[in-house]
Image (cartoon, rainbow, N blue to C red; front, side, top):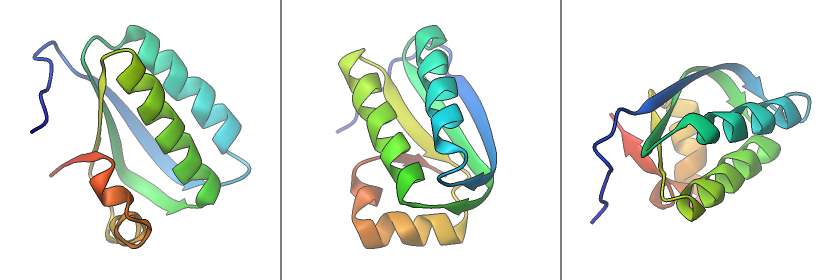
Length: 99
């Protein structure tokens, strides 16, 4: 069972490629978003066109930081290619995925 804090969620829209060229900036942005999130941080991936291993690493790292702060990290708008990647790597069980 996943308990979600009922405080207003923080929504972050991601777009484009999440790859070696964008992961450092994305990590900084998501860590900043954690600072203003109170209970639920939702990442909207509907406009993400590619996610490489580095991108998965950023998502896992942010998930760990969120848990340490008592914040739930959720993914929404997950495109089929990204959903398949999460499924293949077993990470679909690591993240709360909202439809």
